[in-house]
Length: 350
Image 1 (tube, rainbow, N blue to C red):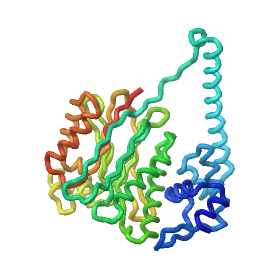
Image 2 (image 1 turned 90 degrees about the vertical axis):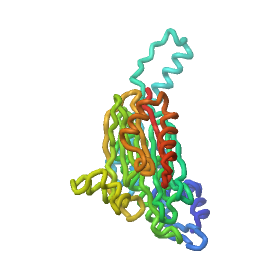
Image 3 (image 1 turned 45 degrees about the vertical axis):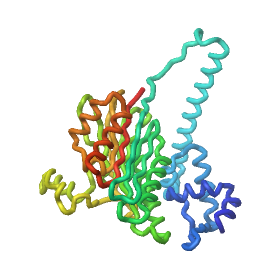
Image 4 (image 1 turned 30 degrees about the horizontal axis):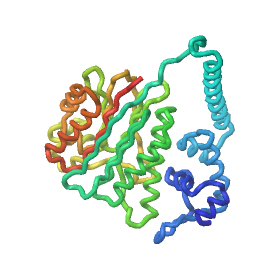
């Protein structure tokens, strides 16, 4: 069945079908290599409807993927409880509004919990001097920031980084650190499948680093490759990620020091990236954060040109995050940075 016919039969728009396919949930059974047309099987109609109904219930894409592999009544019951709790909270909020409107704000006392923290973020990305195009992709919103660096020499690097960012964003619903990792693994599978099935995209891939706030206020970080995350807290800078490169591994094993690593012939050679295989190992961590803490995500085009001490001084000396983001990239440009340079500077706000 063509995607149009399948959309009509399933009641799901072609746009949503493409989103599910890019997330690794509902891949077409065939793709015409010359035209790019997608074809589905009638046997996929049930699965498509299940996916769409779960999405309308607010279930994250990553959880749906796991459920399709191992459907269970227990999981459905857990989701039912979650939806009921969410509905109860919403109904309580609406009841409070009705009270305010009926009785006046001054006569109604509403119990307020601690405000949920948010991320205020500023991003900047500049093309490197020896690049034909900027293959970095960035995303920032109130609860998630992501940077991805498309693999420079490979075709489709820009496409890979854009796919990785979009799928990670779609999968993260502030639920857990596992949710963030599952989204990145789904992005890896989608990129790998796209490269296998579309001519001219062989070998495309990307790094990715993401930092998100959970509903309880914890900061979670997950990454693959050498794009980095830093936390600036109390005038101290902490690197929250370890590069997945040959030289970084040699440094961790004590076989190479940091200065020699920059001059090593294998400097910058990745040991992990999204899209190079059907599975990928995602490193993740979490920490507590406070209001006014700053989080920096950057590609290696920045970390290769600027030292950790310079990053600390910029983040600590800038009155606002916008000037900090511009200062960091300006430093790279002043040193004739060869690679694309991308940063996101985010600040934890109440």
